Length: 517
Image 1: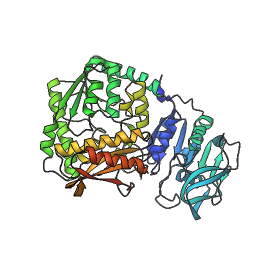
Image 2 (image 1 turned 90 degrees about the vertical axis):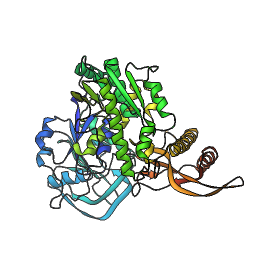
Image 3 (image 1 turned 180 degrees about the horizontal axis):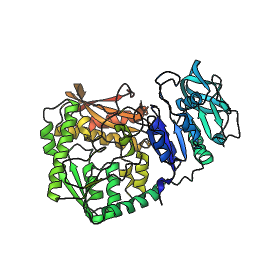
């Protein structure tokens, strides 16, 4: 069974929600891929998609030099759904008119559905709450189109040519603020594109295991196992496929969360349920010595990254020649590295776009390259990986090295490990662990005077962070109940040595970042 035989193409016009659009399609069990608007139409045609979705974007489609696409796209007979800028562009290219609106619409807006029999609005209520974000609007729809929805300030909130399967909507159905957005996208996929919706993780796991077996044959496979979700799922997939032909090297750099290294060994070591060779390298002191006296964040990141490679290289040499190297690359890594979509390269990922030169191997295997994070988690559950590992909080590659402001020492690592463990325990106890996007404790370099008992103290301040986010590109500080924060603060000050003050970070992203460094 070829799970990718059913494909929807997302054409990216620089919108901030490009990945979110793709995720919503995937959530409806249809496989999709993101391509830049600069992609030639013949490439799109060659993919033989069942549908095409045009994303939003920051430009005005009628201005010179604005992102556009050939009119041919709308003449292929393939269903097209334009979102916000994508809808405006569809109208503009097909002879309608787009201009600056007298009133900007931004935020949650009531949308009234005019065309109740529209395939796009099947089982959608009217009015329905949608997320608007636009300066321009469609002032005249193209010939042979009809208006299917409107708002108080926007006469064309949705328009369509049902015969040609062309649909445009002015709002963003992909964001959670649009209450029935997922249903609308699902309607487009099922009612208009006539998708079978066969993209499911149980079938993916089964198919991927067979593909790996065929590719690897009798070869030897090496995997750098961090204990994070991506590398863990990749390792278990390989284990299911080739068993002891796989060797996993786990580098414990001493910068993991409390007891985390032992938990990784418990799952993947010789007493764990998986058939593989597991090597744990205890390199804590090596990393601490390299980090001694270093306080600049990027310098710490570089040292940790380079030292990880050196340690991994040394272990790989002991194993000798391997045929395949496994990497936990996932689809957002690919997109953010500029290899998919149009959005600006956010960060470079060492595991995308080339082969490392420090290990002797023939080929790379990236079994999760097509998956979003939520799909990776679903695959992990299908593989029987413990839920505590599958839903482990996101954790940066440099670990606690960038959750300690200033120089990293063994003492500081213990402080932040203990404080973070208390915070995580109380968040779970309060039933908030599944509600929050990310939460952790960090150690500031601020020391201040305090009073504990009858004694004067001069100790560190711990900063607590908790955010809610959909895409990790923007985030809002979470409003944790005061009682929970008070309990966490009391426990940290009483149970963690050298801490006399606890702070709660309420900065959003932007202007801040989720991590402190």
